[in-house]
Image (tube, rainbow, N blue to C red; front, top):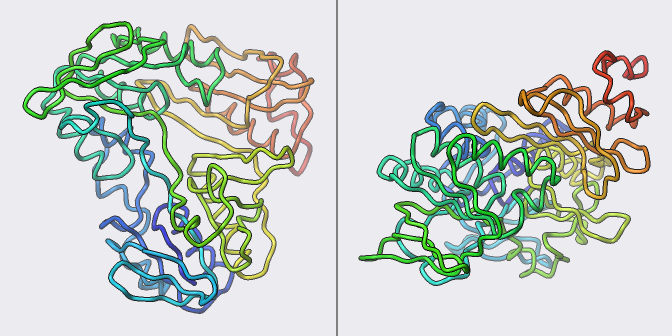
Amino acid sequence: MVIVGAGQGGLQVAESLRAEGYDGPITLIGEEASAPYHRPPLSKAILAGTMEEAQLAIRGAEFFERQRIALLTGTRVAAIDRSARHVRLEDGRRLEYRGLALATGARVRRLPVAGDELDGVLGLRSLDDARRIRVALDRAARVVVIGGGYIGLEVAAAARKRGLEVTILEAADRLLARSATPFLAAFYADLHRSQGALVELGAKVVALDGQGGRVTAVRTADGRSHPADLVVVGVGIVPDTALAEGCGLACDGGILVDDSARTDDPAIVAVGDCTARRTGTGTPLRLESVQNAVEQGRSAAAALLGRERPFTAAPWFWSDQYDVKLQIVGLSADHDRMVLRGSPEDRRFSAFYFRRDALVAIDSINRPADHMAGRKLLDHKTMITPEQAADESLPLASLMRPGR
């Protein structure tokens, strides 16, 4: 078995193959020099200085030896030959495979404006990126974050906690336009402003200005110039589908897979941020989360061994900004009703989203018990009314059927 990509998803495929009883050779190939590590802390604890890099490792070196997983770091795959069933590495080596897993992840989306190449303009995806941003934060006084998604907001929070001047520029008319409801977006705009960050909405970046090859300001379409010692670009990611497309696998905003992580080649599976899941609506579903990588990894391992383990659990995600922990479960798109449990003013509440009276998602702010109960409610399709969701005197756990 050959796994291309040594992130959370790729490692999970390897671990699950062993857990499923596969005893043959496993080769895990990663482009980065580091062994598999946790990515979520990069924009949170690592930038905030509350976690050491050594704590990022998912597994120690002894794990790979014990599980007989050959880990190739700093190694790039150049091409896949599906007819011969081998992958060709950039150094010319060829590795044959019985089953192949693609966990190639995604790359930072570049900003398509003049000045994007200046020193001091950084994106965040890898450990090396986090190291560069951390060093830059140590030297900066004024930080401009381009993009009001979760990564950008987490970087902004880390910079403000250091006491730096922070400006957040979002081209849309609200934060988190792709991934959160208007209610939650407004909550986060208020949160960042209350912490002293300048939040500019409808701010389209047209150029980055520099002096001596280093960024000095960000210009927006309204003619204003925002001074900056550091610019962090967080305008999304692009699924890395180059290898898949190069060998003719179906892609549409990601490598197309089913609920069991299978591609249209029975010998190849794909997991994590590089994938888009086929759905009954015909619109591919892309999920960027640790849970997605882990669950798809388990499904992919089973599929490579000819078994069925579809990933059907409700998706969940989290974000840490300042003293606020957000935990999301479900997909709130197209909801037609929202009810609250708790108080937004106290920064401790949950928003329950319904579609045609069916619960579809919950956003929990500093209420982890609501989140855990919500995951069970959604996974087991337990009926809950909007009135029950809003009733603080009714424990959510009491709605679960016995044995669940």
